[in-house]
Length: 547
Image (tube, rainbow, N blue to C red):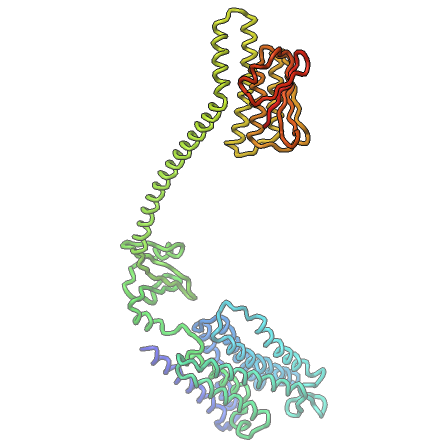
């Protein structure tokens, strides 16, 4: 049997039950037993209908928030019908009857409120937080219910002019009762307006269906308040009338598509030839299957529940838990697998290529480092070429001499020249390799170490740099140190004292050297004509040059 036929049959059964219940109410009763049997039959019919409707909502409505509201409405309807039954057939004491009467207003207030909340929730995202809005709707209804339940203390809902006992045959409406009616009517009207707005979508079928029971419910509510004879005579049972019309509103919303349901599984699976899936119950028994879904064992289904299962020919089985069972579907991932393999191969190729590039880069960096070292070595060699030849000369003399005294003097000269070469190399590396500017402090350290080495040759070396000179160009620093070393190398065999001064005279930075122990420094001027030489004492000479 198709789903549409089942649906029509269900609606026919519901209409027959309602009609039968109405007959039980309006059939003339000749005895009390007939009255009790017919009324209890009517109650059982309504209890069965609303219980079945609540189960239907729990199983079929997709949106969890709307499902919760509608199931709560169904539960309140069952409570209302049950409460009506015990009031008229079980309770006999006045207090019990009045308590049941007051309890009527729990469903009377909460059903319209929850109905409005369900209408607002239609079409909204499930993840949206609606707790504050729901609380804003429910709290006024709860306050009205509390006011009714405590009416005996304040009588602002119902007042009893005849005094005790308070019975529902003789009472008057208080101000809060009209607030209750206004709230209920507001919820119903707002619900109708929201349903009208949300029903205008062209995708909805028979979108006008929820209007009719809504209009009837509003008419009944107004008629009941003002005491319309038609309402009082034929539809005076408030619990039955309100529950029937409210359930009709939301069942119409389900029928026209305003409320999504997960029905027609069998037809869906039969029609969806492009979907390869199956649904099982909790015991892994297959309930629905579509397409060419592969046959699976219970163990395979259990494994798929833990992780997707990959079968032959690139078919992957996935799982999701459902209320009441499991759903499995197949996906063709062969193309993805092929692409994944191609990506893996490409990744391996790129990894190897990257490794080769890394090796080439390291080799190139190593080559550059060697070239840079060779370049620096050539610079050092070129700038200390004279000292290298001088050391070579000293070493040759060292091999030829047989005098221990001469041997010792040559070794000391080698130390002086070696000290200069070490300091000169440090200055070059600081300037070329580290890309740093030379400072006056670098010159001081170099001169201090050279002066210390001169002590080995019995020469007292001193230096002075004007404190006002805070900066010298790199070439000037190298020139000062080179000039000092040149003077030492030229006069190392004759001088006893050498004193170097760096000062600024007449706006020019000059290097002056005072040497002691030289008879005639003409050999210096022959090699450097730009020198200024002046004799200060018999064996003391003053030599200066610009830097």
